[in-house]
Image (cartoon, rainbow, N blue to C red):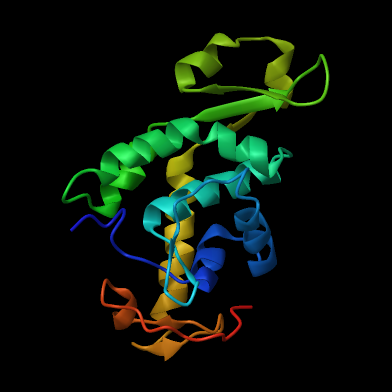
Length: 192
């Protein structure tokens, strides 16, 4: 089984993993021209997120915390999304492969001195090439591996406190049913 793309999580679970409020995540997903994830939806219209979705959104959240807009942060995750898509193509990809694979990537960004916005580079060799430039003073480096590991830890710790098929504080059903079995439609119950 490909753990990267097979297992699905509720909207509330994704918020916990990513470290954003439900209002923030809903706002991001409503901006379809800015964030174009292929998040699954149930017949009732409820979001179901894969580990791949959570990895990308956790990195977007971290970049946004660094001062970038959501649109630009999502654009910067292109290299990361391509890497994750490659891993998702395989029949059997364990989460450890996702964590290790994206852990080999690094993104550096810094304010553009010539105007509003940011400059960026993917990869440590490119970041090292900056050397003693003034950009190094305000350089932010993000490694997606530890960001995903933290998101995974938050979600697994939270789910550990729930019994199988229990309604969590996010208003969603959790436990054994979420592990690849058909999902019941929770109706119009709010997820906040």
